[in-house]
Length: 548
Image 1 (cartoon, rainbow, N blue to C red):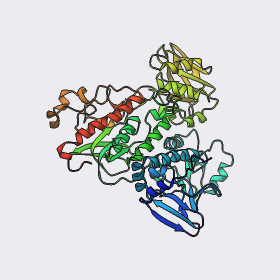
Image 2: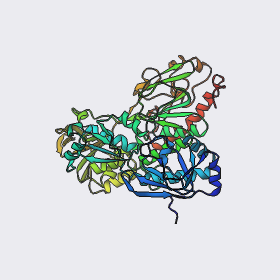
Image 3: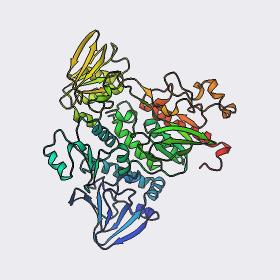
Image 4: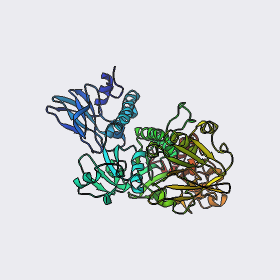
């Protein structure tokens, strides 16, 4: 039986692909894929084979690609660093295809697209559980270490984590590299190259998650890669528009922080927010969308008919239209020292990484919405005790009924109604949480606190330049006040499109938009529908000679 991770292309499919690449012959074993390479090529074996090797265990073959099998995983579509080595066998003939040519073939031939993408996804999932990749050494209670782990986890970067608080012989291992515990956290790659206390920007660059952006004018710049932004990216790119999508941290937005989404159409057994985001991330790139993180947008200005966006880690980005899909962030609890414990006991998402951290511990979850309910059920499988802390009397006021029923049926979940967290305490990490229930103060040995409260729109980069509601969410379409429209001459000729803001060509979708329904399905819907507004805008005479 053929392993679905390593299918064989048909003669007809290979013939189609030959028009996109070049044929090369290797008489001796030759490395064609090297660990850490970016922008690596795609290979189809015509004869002979390619040994795929774990860079940490070079004597063992992960697999050997034989006739009409192919190399690569989904990282080839996003220019991420390759996580394995590939070496030809003797007397091997290969078809080499550049990544951009491969994308063209995937877009044109659906039969090839289906085979490649299915294999890529299966390989990526298998490899991240078997390949160590980067090694990260640091304390579980360090917010610096947590920030790195969180970034790599949410961006699906392969790595092995070594907890400096638990690893025996760590001091001796560090001495091998002339390091001490004061240098932590550190990253070590398979070439034993060391990075001491690396920044998130540095990690994004060295892993290929952040790419160097060209100085060109895009049809669409999507700011934010949550469900709304990814949907807009997929639909805009699939319709032939030149699309760039950027995000300050990782694909997924708030949905990416959900352990399991069960009420999204088409997934009867549920899907994690992370998997949903990763699938959308790959799907957008399949259609030619460029995605790069991390880039934090700082400001935006319009020059003539082109928007110029100033963001971190890159020169100004130019685009004919911009989609604000930056969503909303959970608010911090208004407590003294809360910043001290962020990443060291206080968290704003619940993923498998967090589940492993809080095994057999007492944890608290603050919030009464669906994200809080999903986190409670998920983490109850790992924690000793889960306290769900809500301000009102009815947990079903803002939470879906199926989640309420499961919480009430779970033996190690206790719901604390009419309650608030009033104090967090600890030395270098969270050790105790004080909860006020009615008028009674109760101290709990909670060492992990997950908060899912409030929703603050991520609109700092849009401050003062567009019309918003009292809470800062962006007005679009008919909800824009008349005074704001008077400042733009273009709106004297027409009304704003459904998702257009008070600036022509600047659109807003998803949680950042005033009046939006804070659900994954509605965000995806808005992200797909906004593309029709963009087509109308780009159809104007001023763009007629430059728009695809």
